[in-house]
Length: 188
Image 1: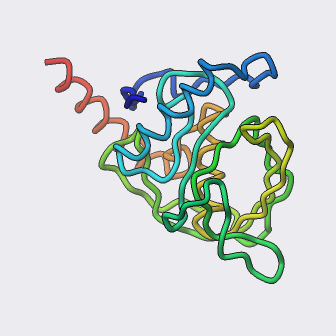
Image 2: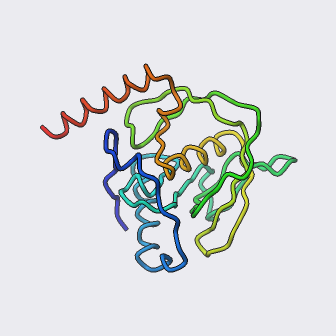
Image 3: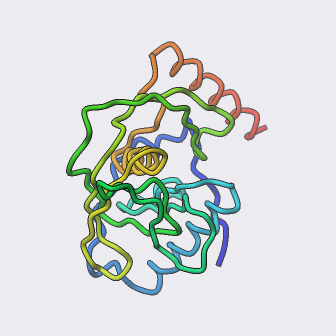
């Protein structure tokens, strides 16, 4: 399909909450959006992309953290408790975190909408997410490690939150200053 332009900070659209996807939204145009989101994510070398990052305020994101396999949407690396660390290409619609671990972990995060910026962010180590798949079926995914972090990061986007909200005000202000300067340079 096609690579769409990314919405990047300081664009205020990143701070808007996304709308639920309704059954009537499932159509050819919706499938094109999903294909474009995967194309955009891969072109930008990302592991996750929320619809808001391409200017669409719907509660949908795509992820791909897995080894490249023939099977789409297949999770791998499940532990004995049923938690996954990676997954292949997956479409997540109307997600909701229904459980979070009390254990927190700090890990460096970056974002396609905040280019060239990486910061340490503290998040729950494990989450359980309920979501709708591309076929309209409700599913549950238990995630840990990078997959857990990616799910939380993308759901934040759907709620109008960018990862820098989770860092100190001083660091956040510095990142915003850099992003405003970069936006100013892009205009000139």
